[in-house]
Length: 95
Image (tube, rainbow, N blue to C red):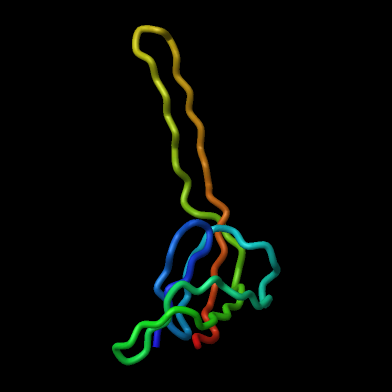
């Protein structure tokens, strides 16, 4: 049994007891959240609807991404770093 959910502008294929990293969702660890379900599949049949419940495991940050801009012969150099805010979710029920 699986479902396709959408959160943070991305789609994820999930099943019960999966852990996924998604863009930040407000809430503390242990909080339960409902995810928007696009499709629901069971034994070869795919239908729309269904519901997916997940539990927030932790709030974390992703790997650092370096943004470096340079224009040659103009003495222009900029270096920035970025770490995306992420949420670790554990899928508790699909159905």
